[in-house]
Image (cartoon, rainbow, N blue to C red; front, side, top):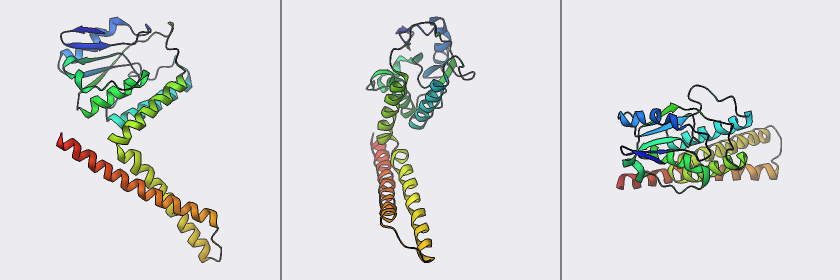
Length: 221
């Protein structure tokens, strides 16, 4: 951690980040353009040195992080960041391991921080993290989904509930059409249709209710 003029810089300890990029990283904070700066490996295009499966996993994490934080970034898993020391209290630092990067962006988004990205270099010829990349991505996704359960209930409950309810409604229309044409209603598919509809409606209303409660609590704060 590097501190100067009330700016905090974080970087990974595996040696992949170049300290020479620090002046570029802190410049937007010093000039007042941003409260937090994210160093991105992908700002000028996708990194081609990494395996395809890693890039796919990274894209999924980026999209999930953007949905949860409302912060548009290209590298959600970058540990090379700079932020004003005055903003440090808005970060929870509850997540474990590499999930901390997505959690910080979620906290920054909810606090209304101005987040800017700058391109950075990265070295892959040094020993990096020993954590399994699949396990890493699953851990981060679980943290994001758990966070969305409270902060984005419309995404977490209402959207899946609507899809389930729509599926049940479509099955119901199909069964009624077949029954009208002389067919019979099969027990298994009919029960599945009823369950999909009930669960979908319940999840949709739960999401709307939790969204209203979250908005009320935010207003009270």
